[in-house]
Image (cartoon, rainbow, N blue to C red; front, side, top):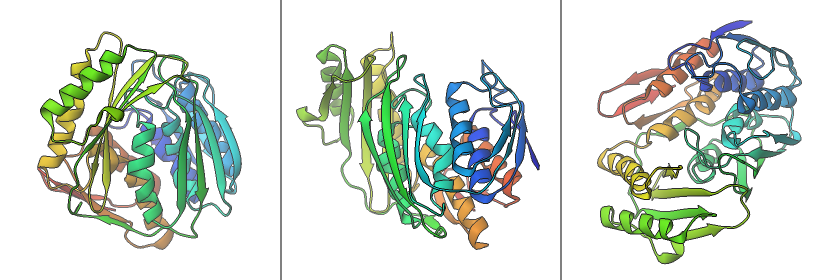
Length: 341
């Protein structure tokens, strides 16, 4: 039984999700204390509890402490298996963050899997569905499995109500992922999502992006969504490269000008384009766990990548990987960081 301190590093929910992914994939029992100690409301929220329940279902785990508000959890995995699963979060909690806890394990499960998750699909401080589907999934497929993701309904804060479906055809093992160069870069593209809000918000955002970037942004890049339960606004900029596609996301919020949403995304895009890194910070954070599982299964390197200076979130993820697996993960460099797992 491995003991994990949830106050490690940035002290957020990623420590729990990373631990769950390794436990389900590799059969490692663990106990975690001080869950989300670094957050304003410590303990399990609905989104984190759903991640625990999802991981429990895919490996028939014995679990204690799985309740909203709990700051301590014990997780003892059984046999990993595929199947068809439905996990409603019940809030606007992130559907893609629930997938973080189970996708790495399902990629090496003995049977195919279909997962339906209901909740939020585009919200602050979480990977958007577009990032998940267009940036992360292609890299997971490069490791051997076949993952397909589709969005059936958008879900915005505060009502949620979104729905994603992810199909996973597993591999017997995982190939290493090496991304030291992003290769040639194509022209960035813009998508703007708008639900139950005035059209001029999207128009202002499009004009702002065009004024700041050389980008493919025809009028049809503005998508108006009628099926969501809450108003929503999302600015998405895809940066396609030879070896990877990055997706940068800005989320509109009450009281936040449209121009501010655009400026945040544009600054991230400019920083990435100006660098020589293969992966931007968020995608780098996402690939660490599957790479480490590949290393554990093959007893060889899980791969390497270059990225921008690591965030505290990414450093915490590396610490959690080391605590759960004993792997030594190297991160070297200043302006461009090379991570080897």
